[in-house]
Length: 138
Image (tube, rainbow, N blue to C red; front, side):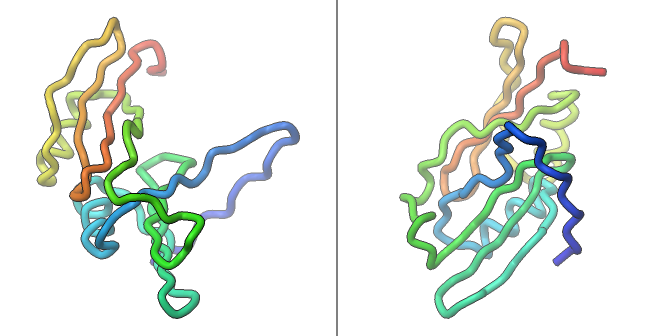
């Protein structure tokens, strides 16, 4: 587990999306997929009580993390039902190639009217997409 970076203050009036629960059947398998195949940073892997486990992972450069959890009723969802999480990237071909090189099956890049997408899923069938918006590049 890495030391978490201090979070910046929350400005008045903001609603920061910082954690998305991802329903998986096997936390260890999912943790390996997200760290080894996608390059997410492991922030937390704790067992605060009997039957409870919380794993928090963050995509490179993101302010929003995902959590894999068991034993928490409020996070209980059918496995593999999360759809369409987007990972915004600067170069979709480069990002796609990097994920493929790590063993992730990623669909072809599709141009949807000037916004580009490439889809993939985790081992439980939760779906993700790489998204590239050329006008957002600095």
